[in-house]
Amino acid sequence: MSPRVIVVGAGPTGLALAAELAEARIDCHVLERRGTRAELSRAFTMEPRTMELLDMRGRVEGLLEHGRPCQHPPVGDESGYLDYGLLDTGFPYSLIIPQHRTESVLQDAAQRAGAVIRTGVEVLALRQDDTGVEVDVCGPDGTTTSERADYLVGCDGVNSTIRAAIGVDFDGWNYDDSVIMGDCKLRNPPSPPDYARITKRGMVAVFRFQDDTYRVIVFDHEKMKLPADLPLPLEDLRESCTAILGVDVDPHDPVWLSRFRSSQRHAKRYRVGRVLLAGDAAHTHIPSGGQGLQTGIQDAFNLGWKLRAEIEGWAPPGLLDSYEAERYPIAAETLRKTDLSFRFETSDGVGARLIRWAVMKLVRVKALQRMNLEHLAGLTLRYPKGEGGPWQGRRVPDRPTTRGRLFESFRDGRFVLIGAGAGEWADRVAEVELTEPLARRCPRVVLVRPDGYVAWAGDEAGPALEAALRRWCGESAQRYASREV
Image (cartoon, rainbow, N blue to C red):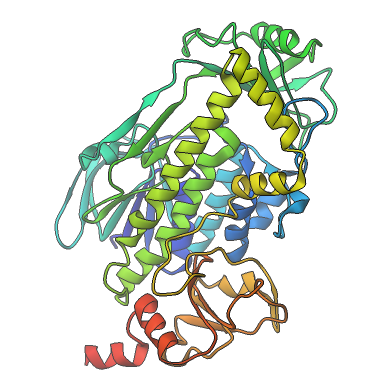
């Protein structure tokens, strides 16, 4: 049987999307060019909002098992640290976890739900019409075959074959400076295990994984003009760390070491007909704070339920187009912030050093620290307001309900309605009663999308709620059945 959706790329974005679709009983195949998973992984953190989304589907436990919470990330002056405990979330920390572990957990979730993961498979070309997408693929044995699906999603990274095939421009630039990064053990690790220091020579940041391996990130002003493809001997890493820190951390037994040169690029479009883009295929930037991984997984949560609605036939007009409309501005803002972060961390002038000194002092102020952390954690991301009132598009925090936790109500991928009955939409909407307020001055009745953002909020049920249900959930089951007859 042909899959309803083909996902190209088995990175975090593609696997998260496959799990979303498969759990909704949408037949999904993931095609991955790599034969084996690489242990080289630039992304190594999971932020609170991403963990909240995964918690809504019951997938976060595997990540917590393989990750180490970091509640107090360093700011770069040895004694200054941020405090994730200031945030209103059930995950008040950044989770330190290698990307290959994240991919393993997400792949297990996708396969348990029924997704088919095929490795060593390369997409050579694609064609689409009004009813579906056809791809030519080369299998591990070199045989070329054609496959068809209702939709195809390119999650195949910066050098996306799918993006090129649909003719979408990938605008942006490459940075001139190269950065040193790697995973290794340290005989003389700094204390605490999550440590960063910025000096005149550059910056070193060190984060310990769950085992005794460390992620080491180095901005060495004396070596940043070296070619990114120049091999990185262990001794070069050691020399840079010693020069910046003033102490030898003595790295050894590297898992991988690399110089890399980042780029800032953004696809002009996320959708062309029945082909869509997500993750690094749609946007890429420096790996600051793991924002690329967060943005990609959040792409998957936004897109998954909308594809489901289209395939099941109840999607209201324009729903699938709202994926680009909502996610494009989020990625654009992330690109802007990560660019500022990179320039802040790497600039070498006297003025830049003064600004860094001032920022490291100001960030100790709790109000400013909370504001900064809310952005980093993804808790301030919101979608545009509309007819749903001023609360539309806001993130929903977890709260206790009469039957457990609010996030548990999202496990089956339905909408959640707080404070009212779903009526004819009960097949697509779960009804929930909270035992604590959702937020200060929040209306009593709230319709929440399957990806955990407010669709509509009002003080009472009535015609406005019914209009919101029709706007977001399509025709009710009763009316949809009447139309089919």
